[in-house]
Image 1 (spheres, rainbow, N blue to C red):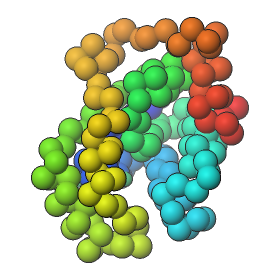
Image 2: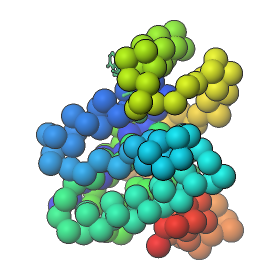
Image 3: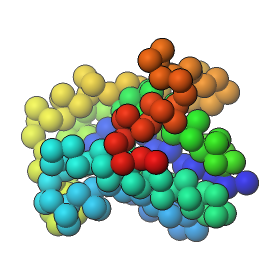
Image 4: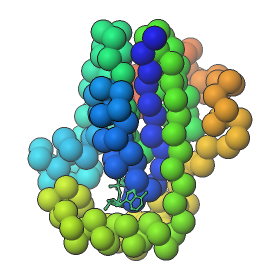
Length: 174
Ligand SMILES: Nc1ncnc2c1ncn2[C@@H]1O[C@H](COP(=O)(O)OP(=O)(O)OP(=O)(O)O)[C@@H](O)[C@H]1O
Ligand SMILES: [Mg+2]
């Protein structure tokens, strides 16, 4: 059985660092949208293009799972519904899903973002204090039930299943 590793955490939490290690350990492919946004647009977001890239990467990831390769999803995944959809999609591809949450306190987050900007400006985007604080208020932290991974929420009432929800959330997802 293949595994989808789902990394969850705020900017600077260490997701991409962890994702690189997991990809090596498990010979997995790593899906990091920043590595597409930056060369294509020079920005973290550009008129919804990030959603388009994430949708294509998700479709690619599901193909890899079906083909026998583990996958590391390095999207951030701030929303509980996003995480539920991805867990459901992994199961539908016959794979298991391991959610890895990397908590980070505000001071550590600030320090890591500043250090990364100094060390590797070509791999990252400038981030303001307002961006950091705004992220912390919008992030939906996984609770103990979600982390245990035994219970999967139903999709919101307007969607028949998580596949339909995912196709709305990520317009290029098929
Ligand atoms: N466990 C750790 N201890 C100390 N420093 C770390 C740790 N994990 C990552 N870092 C450093 O913190 C910075 C941010 O890490 P990383 O780029 O992996 O975060 P991220 O969660 O992918 O952030 P983003 O959401 O902005 O892409 C990097 O400079 C990295 O080297
Ligand atoms: Mg990253």
